[in-house]
Image (cartoon, rainbow over all chains, first blue to last red; front, side):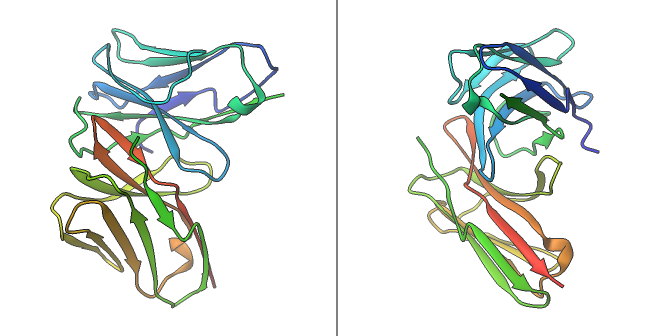
Length: 115
Length: 109
């Protein structure tokens, strides 16, 4: 158990819809990262938050947005969903804010299926 | 955009054999990590290498960071069924952790 909690574990929805994925980081971790993993592929970095502020941005679509709340949990919002958005979405947390080689602890992921 | 290519993409070998997985990039990374991911779970960190030329051993796993900090390798000695999984390298650079394309390893008992 990494200590990172993601909900929901599975989500099935239709094209055009909007969903929200939730992540609770490990106790004490200030950084939250979101990654997308498509079938049999590596992880694509979407966005990082540190203590409520956006720290780094990857290849995140404009239809996607995220935020980190004062209690440090984070939400990833996916809107106008397309078939190609079907993927595993991982949240990870770390104690440090910078990408300095610290360990990332990953949740079990949220599997999104868009029909 | 920093890209990390892993090879091979798929590898299936008999228990007891040795294997090497490669992670290559044209970019320089300040450090590089290797993760293992099992079905239904998130990746779990195996090792972090920081210095060019660094070699780290974790039981039967040996990790090496290239001298120029652009590439890395993972060598497994006497592979066991418990080594089965998706192996991912990840490099730190430009304020991001970039993951490689992954190597799916299957060890046949």
